Length: 187
Image 1 (cartoon, rainbow, N blue to C red):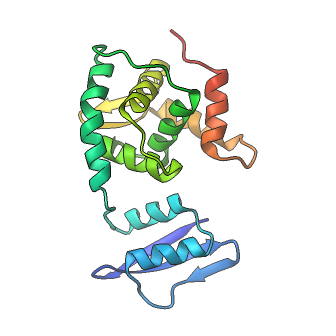
Image 2 (tube, rainbow, N blue to C red):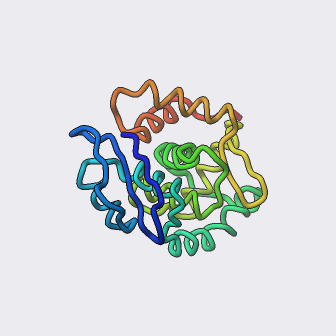
């Protein structure tokens, strides 16, 4: 459901959204948390709400995401450098993190990967899960690393888009999980 949020003042926002009941417009500007609760009550997707708020300039409460990224970073860097073995994870891990990277359509800091993953699955991934998923995506040739930022290659982005668009009204991560379990990376 498309959501458009516009900043109206200091922590005041108005919105227009396509909901299951039809088009909804806010009657007056609201604080972002109140607006978020209203959109949820109308049946809007929490991830879409979060992205619309980010597009409007609302900075998420990311203290815990940043803290989690600080803990994960050295483990991830060691795994990517080949200095740490990572326990095997389920195909769900790769699907979850791939979709977290895909959703924003831009390069992400590690804390943003954690935040995106949390928004998708309502759970923060740990260092083994993220490390394993990144190693698998790199093995596929789908992972881009630029300094402290991570993303999907154009090929990886097209593949994820193609895979989830073929899903039958299912949760995108489940569609990816099924595909990843049937198509392990080569090499």
